[in-house]
Image (cartoon, rainbow, N blue to C red; front, side, top):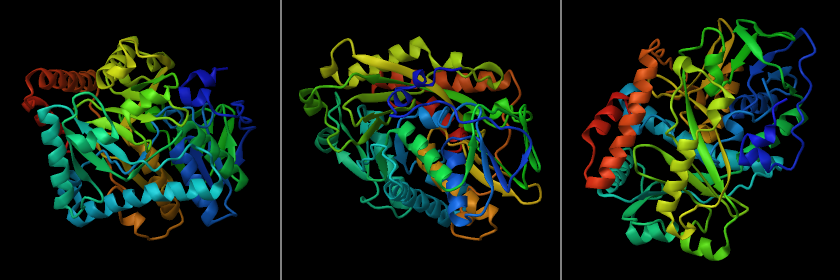
Length: 459
């Protein structure tokens, strides 16, 4: 049996047993069967059970609730979305783009409301996000982000441009020139959130079967080695693990994100770093980094940079990439020299996230087949998975609401290219972004190639 506490710092610090729930005992019937006990699957179950308490809902999970990204992520419950406002407007119109962003803003408040109402202790802190600019090109991108927000009617109360002193007052990283700040993000302990949510849905009458890998999804059924769950509605909520299902190899690319966590830092160190409101933090480089100040005083810090694996393979062996962990420690030391030359890391971990070919997250339901899905969050799923769950609950119940008219509903992303083109494209893009960041740091000039690549993604 996997040693679940070793999967992440978060899972190692939940105050409960991670003993798996019983497996599926055999063939059975349900009204709704959900494949995947991460945020998407559990939020869908939660809102369905709240809306219609009599529904027979079964959740099937290959390992345990929170095994995947939901138990390993950076702990940002944010209003971030992989497609920019400009990209959404280009595809769906300005009003639809604004509605999507407003729904994401409201989602952060909604998750906080449910956490409080259901008594889920997940170290919730409404600190917002500070995104630093530490080079000239990063400062240009910070200003462009604010200009875009203003063009869509979002004022400084939603995204503010910070000067050097204002940014450093929130996060005193080395060489800060400015940045942006949004209040639309909360810091969470992600494993406590997903494990708490699993307990809540069980109280509502939902059945969760763990250690029950689904081998096939088809209209009217989810098939496992232990038996088949027959249901008129089948929800795929598998995110970065989607390519492991038959016929889904090219649906999303499983891209790995890795993290490190320091030992608890002394008060005097935090006085020099900042993050006094437990703000989440990042900067405006091309290759994403992300971090938070945990409730127990650690720096939890992560980023992209791990390679995409040929054939969309997903394996526990890919969760740990020493080269990337070393780069994360090095970046932490560059951001916060107070940590010293050997950043005191106690935990290292990682896992896959789902990337659609057009970088567009989606949620949908085909009533004719009864098949539903949500995902493609590109790492921004802590908040948007709640919006997905609420939307799926409305779609499945046949309700037409403000959520069911949002532009990501029933969006169909194109399939990724066959191999070896997929492997070449994803890893070439990663190398391009990494080299662009290095070049900008050396020359203090923006990378034209990276900007062109971003435009090709439709962002």
